[in-house]
Figure 1 (cartoon, rainbow, N blue to C red):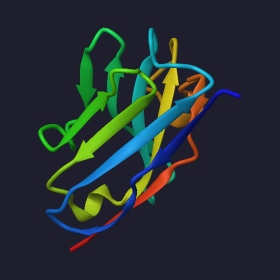
Figure 2 (cartoon, one colour):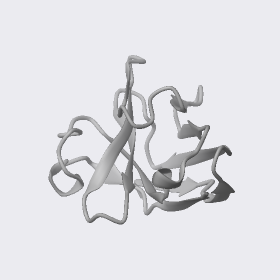
Figure 3 (tube, one colour):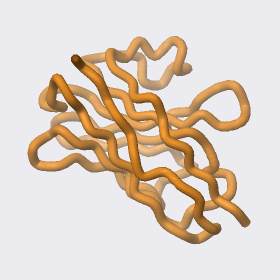
Figure 4 (tube, rainbow, N blue to C red):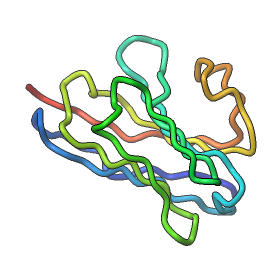
Length: 125
């Protein structure tokens, strides 16, 4: 079965750090586009970061310089290192992976092959 499972969420104070993990089963990230979205209290989810299989990275301006996306050498686990967390980073974080997709569209229109179920991150002030 092809699936993604996130872990590493939790509650931290502002300024703290968390590392999210996304483990793939049934496939590897080799040749895919991988990324993280987050569902904030507003209904629309937003793109956080993307990692292409060739190593090209993209970050939303709101997390640039604070978050780092990476994968392990086996290409089965995707990470999101989050530093200097702010209360506005509070959200459910989802990982996604696929051969293509409309990554800059809304989550509903992204048409990305595989999604995880999400992990909650809560940042208190």
